[in-house]
Amino acid sequence: MELDFSFLLEYSGVLWRGLLTTLQFVGLAVVLGLIWGFILSMGRTSKNLFIYWISTLYVEFFRGTPVLVQLFWIFFCLPLFLGVDMSGFTSAVIALSLYSGAITSESFRAALKSIEASQFDACTALGLPNGVRTIFVILPQAVLRAVPNLLSNVVSLFKESALVSAVGMADLMYVGQNIANNVARPIEILSAVAIIYFCIGFPLTRAVSMVEGRLLKVVKA
Amino acid sequence: MAFVEIDGLIKRYGTLSIFEGFDLNMGSTDRLVLIGPSGCGKSTLLRCMMGLEDIAGGTIRLGDDDYIDGAPNGKMKLNRQVQKEVGMVFQHYTLFPHLSVLGNLCLAPVRSRGIKKSEARDKALGLLERFGLADRANFYPSQLSGGQKQRVAIARALMLDPKLMLFDEVTSALDPELVVEVENTMMELAEAGMPMMIVTHDMHFARNIATQVVFQERGKVIEAAPPKDLFGNPQQDRTRDFLRNVLHIEG
Ligand SMILES: Nc1ncnc2c1ncn2[C@@H]1O[C@H](COP(=O)(O)OP(=O)(O)O)[C@@H](O)[C@H]1O
Ligand SMILES: [Mg+2]
Image (cartoon, rainbow over the protein chains, first blue to last red):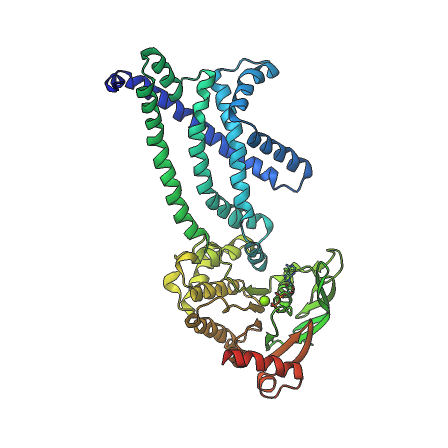
């Protein structure tokens, strides 16, 4: 078997556009997931039992089912339920964001829970009202502590985003598969796709460890 | 009338009873040092004084005011105005790690006492200067030594002009060579006339700073006396046993 990577050059433009689409999906899902995840984490630490159970059920459901199933469900079933036309792009973004929100909320919740009781004692000893305590003492520390976890969520999401190719979104994975079918050279093209994913994913993973080391030093005073 | 009056204090953690009717008085010029075996409730007593613990019975008065009125089932009454007059420093610093030294000092005055930022800042810088920490104002807690952290914690409490300061083993987590700087800071406060309740294992320091030493065991005061009497001529067997043990360990 002979390997020939030279033809890849011809397809570099298509691959590039595929990568941009992937990054677009991930970017949107990360931002929307952050907002949604924060709201969910408030729900999961709420004293209101109804809010607590609803948000807990939601999070457990999205963590406990395959992303591919969620994606298909939202792509094929949700428009039928709502009786509206949704572009494939919109469905895919919604699916990824709903999933990313569930994962993100867990990171926030863990960070909130990791704050020592002594920080609360210090606030009481200084006579800080609850609102001031939450906004100026607890939240900033929770966010700082959540950062490494949030970044690794981004890495996972980046990899899981390849699933959108299954519903026909022209992301990097989809484009790669198409070219592979057209030119009948799956080894070269799929290897190239894997390497492109890795070139983005690896620096992200490294960044996570770096940030983790630095932040922990600050936060664990 | 005593400055601090603890009367019939009842404190339980679930079924574990710490105090069943504990009494203690303190004068307005007193520096009370609490000593006693580990687990006898010294920290709990200070935490009750700070209003951090729910007490099931008894009363605490401070100055002319009713401060805490204990009641079972979380029905304790606490006067927040009086609570503001008490400051506390903990064993493990409990600085806010995401704020600079200045940020730590200014947060409570600015956010809950309505003091102007510039005013709080000037006061903070003055306190840091007095404690020899002026060059650390913009450092973060993680960049400070344990002794510096603990002195910042003391300064943070002083920002609110407390009438009573509580110190719970504030030197226990420190490397031996850093203990002195914190103890000196506390001595300076003592000389400035600050009433204090102090828990410490350092008997030498206790002797120097206390006006009154209180030996407690199993939720009761066994003996209370000025340091030279309590250390020099303890009246109770249990006090003698305790002192012999700790002084022996200290060498
Ligand atoms: N939050 C808590 N819940 C249950 N038990 C506690 C709690 N805090 C302290 N205790 C118990 O109360 C007793 C007194 O503790 P403490 O006041 O810390 O003693 P000391 O400071 O004299 O060593 C100990 O037996 C301790 O285990
Ligand atoms: Mg203790």
